[in-house]
Length: 204
Image 1 (cartoon, rainbow, N blue to C red):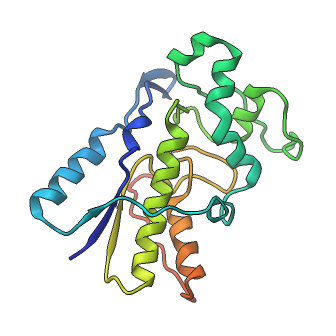
Image 2: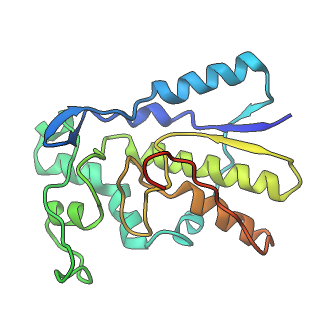
């Protein structure tokens, strides 16, 4: 039977609006996606549904830059500190340092850092984004560890998704790169080569 590692915190991240083709629209990436899959896994009795194992913060820094992780961990509190009314609205970037603009110096301005660490205006940062993304990373790493230790197959059932995230940026609904984190766990467990098959139909 397959082990499924489920992110019980995924619904803490639920964006309100995203920018799509020139207008703000309700977010396409929603908690119902994962809830539907969980219900089907349970209906089919495909195996145990488990919480992810705990992991050290250093596991994230094998893939993501420390200054990016620090930003994600504190971004919501910074956003609300700018204006208490911000607690009712998600954060979307409005400026991006591209090409020849400097990225080596961390800006003091929150909006500038938001743009530095993002690639699109379709990934709202919410009050629960960091909690949900970190728990999701735990699911991916737990599944990889289970396979490395002999489990034939394991499934990380989580959102927000992860594969669009870079070492120091979020976007495409992704904050932490679950695929890269899982691959790194396998490498850390002694697997010499890891293949990643990305079947996202629009951008892989």
